[in-house]
Length: 205
Length: 138
Image (cartoon, rainbow over all chains, first blue to last red; front, side, top):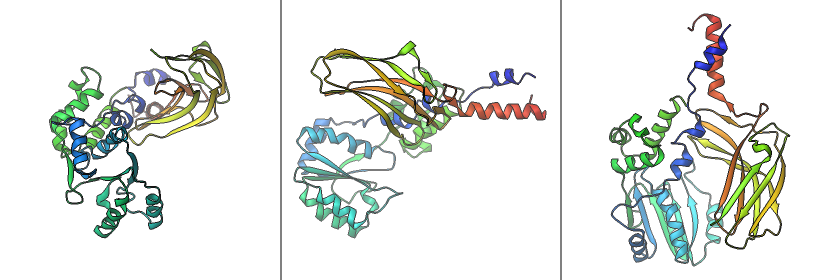
């Protein structure tokens, strides 16, 4: 019986811990501004009285950018208070909203991720309550909720840049071409990177 | 220049549940310290959202800027270290100093064998063994 020999020769798939496209590694890549510096971005936000929307499709980096604004806002003396809604939690109870706004102070900026989950009436109520805060920055898929502060746009070369940052030198040659990947996922970088996770997961470790 | 180090006795990184995890930590920092802690924790890494849980903490009282201290912990009974294609559960020791952002991490394995359990290796091994017995493989 030589099962042991067979097992030794069997290729073993890559462990999740070694996958270069694991979620924690992807999250370590922060928002990359295009044609704009952080200083210019913050000046633009201040010019909008810290009320504006980050607009973009799914997987375009809106949430990442909103998170990255927090230290820049802190440096300007603001505290960020987070409010998040998403498809699996599209609503809030009036009690939770009341609790949230009871904690808001004058030097707080509300970072509201997923504002488009609200219906228009709930949004108008949220906007009125948010006036006690120093600012309100939201993420939405479509414009029209607040003046657009920045449109998050993805590009094939941005995906290429991120893939290069995540993969060891030379490994890009074995990966599907990023331009094709970008098109296949309609510019959704999160989904494109998830496909690369699966690509690596199927490879011998 | 700050330096943080974690060393386990005999450089062990594999432990069975209940076994002692012993060693020493050392630090050398430019600024005065408020707290130094060694944390034993697990975290997940993979395709989905990461989870993390600190299971034991050792606080080092009145830390000086440059010092070495011994530590003794017990390897918890669960969860075991494992890896599949979609998720890995990883145990680690982490030395955290405050104020400051520096940390030092040492990954270890905790399981009945002392080694990380590799799920897809087990599956494949079982499949091949089964297929070979049935005469359907190779």
